[in-house]
Length: 331
Ligand code: D5M
Ligand code: MN
Image (cartoon, rainbow, N blue to C red; front, side, top):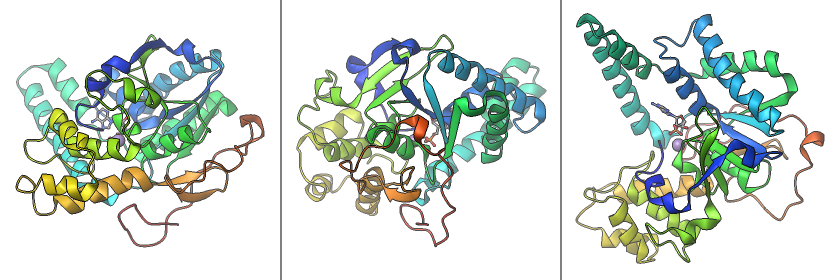
């Protein structure tokens, strides 16, 4: 779920905010973050039946009605196809869910029902089917007040794209990946009373815990990848501080990897480059052209998108058709 230890080291630029601080703005919301939270909050043991769908939809609706009351336009973005580079992370998550399910059975058999419930809800796989059901309910309950988009691949890169190029003003998520993807303004850890932490990418140079003054986004991405992310583990013995020290040398990728020789596995060079590439060039859906574009290839000088009222509704990108590659297939 993002970059190891990143948010902990950005406390000095995390500003405590109430959602009302964002009144009148446009929010891009990480749909899976709320799906996971909805499942855990309700301690659901199953997320497939009509009752579970009703509970999770209500969880979304309560929040969204408050967004609407503040005149915040909400666009919920769900994940689409899986990225090949994330398969190890997905496999780890699936193993953790299986372990939670086994532990839940043991806790139930040993007479610890509360623990069994908690573990059972941790074992739930949040699926695209659940996202689609929740979306259906929300459309019927909230109509045009809330918009939806299924990203071609990860919601993270899609949300960062929308935020970088002006379709949304801020992103609501729990995922620190949004920052190396370049999202300008992120609202983290929003609680049930709508308080959370705002992090602005432009404040990176003012971080006190680690010195990012004068860093380019590429250097920041290298640091994030070295610290360990969903696409690649950090090299052995490299934590956030060490990753920062290495990236601080401000070397290019090759020299930086040469510095690490002896400490890294044979395939780390390849994995490191691949992870940096995804952060820079992820495939995202452009609402203006209706096509897949690369995050970095998009032209920010192009005329700004029309105001939200005039915009065609955002829609799901066409299904990719060609074989897989690093960034996922192109349409
Ligand atoms: O995670 C996508 C979103 O879903 C992100 O906001 C975190 C959240 N998420 C993912 N897995 C979990 C679990 N197991 N518990 C709680 N929340 C979760 P991404 O890392 O982009 O795949
Ligand atoms: Mn992520």
